[in-house]
Length: 418
Ligand SMILES: [Zn+2]
Image (cartoon, rainbow, N blue to C red; front, side, top):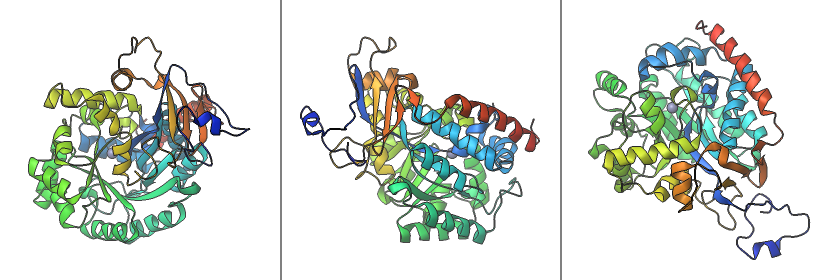
């Protein structure tokens, strides 16, 4: 690796290394492209365990929105630090993140400092029932603040930070907000990230409010195409999947979150067969309750087998959702997602010597079906070593944890939920 990019690969690469290069002993390990999660909420990491045993709408209205509304700068920073620590330590190098409505600069500051690659943005909400007052924005405020963040952060940290406009979902956004956001994203070549077709109750509420399904409404408002990333897609019909594929809209599969909130099992095989680019994500900590990409890989593999048969989703295809296909979801396949000369040096070194993997027959299958966060030895993003020998570089993880515990107690109290 040189200047943040992969300079050479293979047995002759060592000969090309000049004096001063650093060597990593990767014997007994697999070297993979850094893993990608294309749907997470760093602002919610502090809320892990604070919204248990609820279906989506009540999970949102009774717990998550009041908690997001209670965030201050210190709690938001602690939440982002905790989430980035957990993800870097487990080998996630790139995320597509959706924030809360206010104070999102702090999340980017944490990502800039800790070295993770992030595409993300503040969430946008200008409509809908049950929204706490200080989460609700006017349409103009929401667009103005998103534009400001985009101008400040898109392309920051040498391109490691990119902006994504993030209207939350169709029930919390006006038609004007969605249309104007879609227009900006198309013009500026910036991603639009939203939730769609997640839970049966939400699906029914959308039909009641708008007379059609959210994906159809969104498409009629211009929210469709290769620059649009929809999280979940559990409730999609076959016809909707075909239309999404034809438009080139991306979908993110969040198997653990869909299980926890009882949302259902997305038609992963159907989406892939239709030609949809599908990514994988843990979603937020309170609907999972882990941000460990290995759990997500395993759940994706197992649920596909339950829904479509034991041969429907080989390990390579599952891993692809967090590597090259994951990069396509974000429009970054020219930069990341595979180990190729000239691409960004985002690499992870994962041990294959754990007793829970032995005896290793096929490395990819061992990683997808038996891999754990604790197997990750080294994490490199843009050529920078951010996890060395299983430890975060330049960050005391015990301090991060203690700060999170303290800020979580204060957050609960401010939200009136303690
Ligand atoms: Zn989400």
